[in-house]
Length: 456
Image: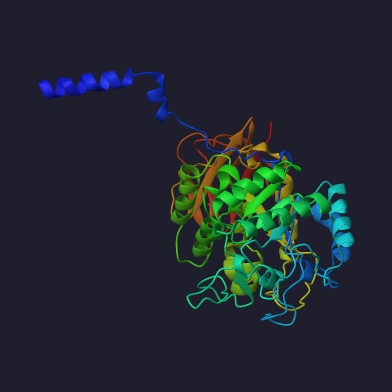
C-alpha cells in the first residue's frame, strides 16, 4: 500500500510540475508546407511530350491546352524536358530520365522559347506547369562526369554506377553527401522557376535523395514564388517541410489487387486507415489508374483494371487524394506507349474522357471533394456486404457525397448502418433527386457504382 501511495504522489507531482516540463509531450504541428491556393481542388495531367502529339513538340502540345482546360486539368506535369544522354542510351531516342544537361531543352521537343511560350499559354488558361526533375542521377555523358567526377557515387570497384538493384543502365547516380552536387542541383531547379516561370516540380525517385536537401530547396523556391512539389515516393516525412503531394502507391496496389481478384474491399480499408492515421492531415496523396510507368511496363488501364476500371476512376476522383490523369486515358488509349521511341497517341472521343470531365467538374464544384486540407475526410459507411461493396461519405460545409461501389463480379443488394449518409442528394449519373434514409437499399450490378452528391 505504501508503494502505491508513493507512486500516486510522484504522479501528482509530475502533473503539477512547471509547464515547461509538461509541454515536452504537448502535440506539435510539424508541417510547415503551405500549399499554393490554386491547388485546393486541382487535378494533375501528366503530359508525355514525345507521344502527346504527332509532332512531339511543345508548340504542338500548346495547341491542345484549351482542350485540357475543358477536360478539367489544372496542373500540367511535363515529363523531363532536358537533352537526353547518348552514351548507353536505351532505344533510338532514349529515356527522358537520362539527363545530359540540366540547363538545356531537348531539341526533340523544341527550344527554350517554345517552352516559355507553353508555360505562358498554360498560365493564360488558368493552368500551372510543373517539370519532372531527375535529381538522383544523370546520363553517363553529362559534362559533370568529367568536370566533377567526385560528385558521383561509386560501386565496390570504384566505378560509376547506376542506381543499385535497378536495370537503369543508361544513368549513373550522384553522391548527395557532397555539398557541390547539392548546390548545383538546387541552383538548376531555381533557374527554371526564374527563367521559365514554371510552378513546381515532380521529383523523380524523391526518397533516394536526403530529406534535408528537399527541405532546404523548398524554402529557397518559395522565396521566388509559391510552388507545388510532388514526390515520386511514399514517405510521410517528405510532407512536413518539402512536398505538397506524394504517390499513393498503396492505393493503386489495393484497387489493382481487387480488380485482379487477388484481394477484396478490405485492401482499401488498409490503405485509407494508414492514410488517415499515419500521414499528416494536409498531405496530398496522388492517386491514379495509369501513369507513364504503369502504361509502358505493366499495361494499359484496360489491362490492369478490366471491368473494375470505371470504379477505379470514380474512386480516384471522389475519394481522398489529388487525382492524376495520364495523357491518352481520356481517349481510351488502347496501347502501351513505347518509352524509348516515337509512338504517338491516337486521339479520339471516348466515354472515359467524358467520365473524367464530369468527375473533375464535380470535384471543383463540391467542396467535400477538394484536396487536403480544404476537402473532407472519407468516413466509411458500414454496409451488409463489406467485403464486396465499398461505401463512404465525405462532407464539408454543407457539401456532401455518398459513394457506393460494387467491387465484385456479382450483383449486390446492400443495406446500410448508422445515419451519417441519410439525406437528400442528386444522382451523379441520372441527375434525379434521391432521398436516403434508414429504409434505403441499393442493388448494384457487377463492378458498378452509385455516386450521390449534395451541394449547399
